[in-house]
Length: 263
Ligand SMILES: NC(=O)c1ccc[n+]([C@@H]2O[C@H](COP(=O)([O-])OP(=O)(O)OC[C@H]3O[C@@H](n4cnc5c(N)ncnc54)[C@H](O)[C@@H]3O)[C@@H](O)[C@H]2O)c1
Figure 1 (cartoon, rainbow, N blue to C red):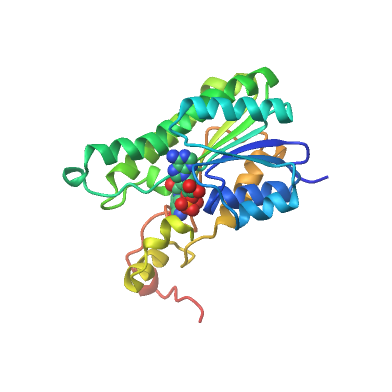
Figure 2 (cartoon, protein in one colour):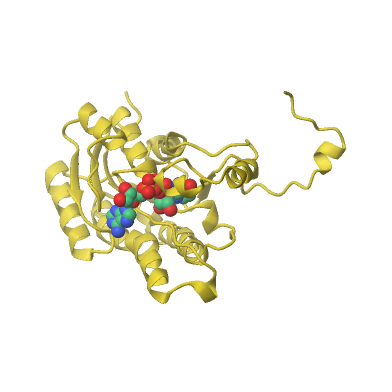
């Protein structure tokens, strides 16, 4: 039996990057996926998921629109009769240092990354409470665990997502609902494509102890585990999928004492 056989998943940000990779992986593992994104994808992982499982469904809408989310989740429930997994992957980058950030840009980043996650959970939870089961994973970031230069709105929004996830793990565990934040390092998606400068790309690669950025599929593998019954005792975690990015710092002492990597 496949890992997610018979499960129904609602995925935001399903048209691109990590959300689309989750849709494809979930379908490969036997799930039915209901995608929700502000953009419709005609190709890529979402299109592959749909080709593999034509019963999947997509609704176009924004995670900032409470009514659209409510309508989509009602439609999902009517169509599939249950809701086992939610992946909140819709997100945007929010850059700038505090004195340079336009308040409207801070509002936009918080509205999509943080409040959007809250709104989706608000409508998904009653169905899961009725079922007395469910797995919610909120795609935060290593930038929700530690700060990075020039990304004040993004850092703030992802830190909020991490603690909202832990709050929900406490409040809804009694209904058998598991809630986890997933904290990827830098992942090769359209969002990170702005890292074009070769010098900066090399520094970003080197900041991951494995020496490279991750792929959307590597995050989707972890999401499939968290959505499955194999993760039945995993709740309230901020799970890093970051190639060692947040493990700690290196100053060269290791190499000074002879820990030289093989060629
Ligand atoms: N790429 C990375 O390096 C990285 C690292 C850590 C965390 N993340 C997080 O992973 C998540 C997915 O990012 P990604 O890298 O796949 O980016 P992406 O740009 O490939 O995908 C983001 C998706 O969200 C959708 N979206 C944006 N605003 C929306 C809205 N208002 N309503 C509905 N959908 C909306 C976009 O249309 C897009 O399909 C984001 O939350 C991001 O912050 C990304």
